[in-house]
Length: 260
Ligand code: OAD
Ligand code: ZN
Image (cartoon, rainbow, N blue to C red; front, side, top):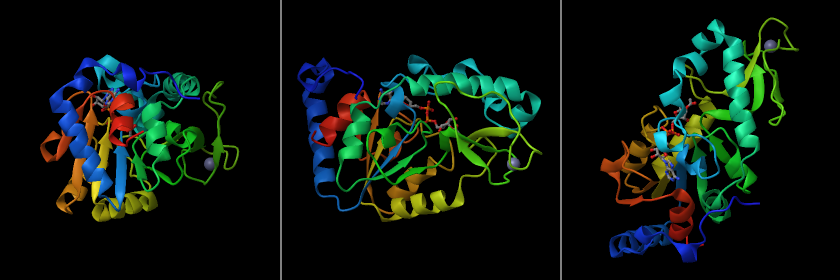
């Protein structure tokens, strides 16, 4: 089930401008010739599904309303675990109520596209994509904060509060995501880096490209000679490396670029 968006025949006026049409054709031709296309996304991919972004005030930008260090860092969790779990509870309920949008579905339906995302919402997987490299983990599970190895899925409709790890009993459970100040999962990062070194086209969707090391993947692909296609509602920190920058909502632009 895909959340509604405007059907393609009701494209916004901008989609019909000659400039955007030319850019779409350029992006389509880059992708048509690609043997190893890779997509890399951020919160903007899920914005039209109703999932808040972090830095875009137009789409619920969480870090404009809340201090990221209080809600998404080991220090924040040590200071007030209940506040952290409450905020994650809110996000979990929001994601549970969301459906993949047309951009998720277009990406998931592409035959040869590899997927790298900063998103923790699993909407791409729910749209049918497999082998998604989740750089920042997944919000759908909790794990032991002391890394004893305990991981368990959570009820996204009725998310848990603060509780002890049932395995080691010595630590609390926390969302299985990467927080500020923490390292990315090494195996996932290495595979993402390799994909970006070897891809011929990188389709970047809905990221402000300010959080590293994730945003560095765009430079890695660019330096390795890949064509960079950007889809975003506004220019981003990656605009200067774009071979083709398409400004507009992902739910309309991505299916148009991928020809579906
Ligand atoms: P941001 O919130 O920083 O950026 C979202 C981007 O999506 C912005 O550039 C918006 O312009 C764009 N956008 C909004 N709606 C869009 C739409 N409908 N179509 C296309 N683009 C749209 O989110 P990320 O770049 O994902 O990290 O942020 C990176 C990381 O910072 C996140 O993974 C998270 C956060 O702190 C962790 O939690 C570790
Ligand atoms: Zn434990």
